[in-house]
Length: 137
Ligand SMILES: [Zn+2]
Ligand SMILES: [Zn+2]
Image (cartoon, rainbow, N blue to C red):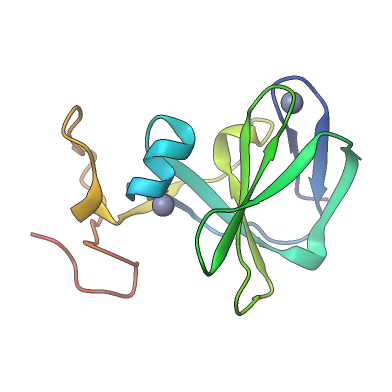
């Protein structure tokens, strides 16, 4: 097991048995409204994500192609995954992972959609859209 985590109320608890990838901070408008801020996530293989508790876990179709998992009791934003077409990856909200996570933030994505109440000043790579798109100025 490489990591454990869960929501604020404990209704959702999970363990990850495989590798967690480096953290991406996503500044897109959907993450902003979902969380109230930008969302930092670490990807794992969906087959490596195991639930010790999931009674309050709800999946919401947040777009035509993706869905987001959250706790319906405490509201914690927990998971993002592509639904159409599905992939083998699930993105886990990094703040829900029990520290020490051993993870580091690698980059900022969708910075073209970020709100104006904060600046990104950590010197990490910034991408206007997805990480494989051109780097923003
Ligand atoms: Zn909860
Ligand atoms: Zn996003």
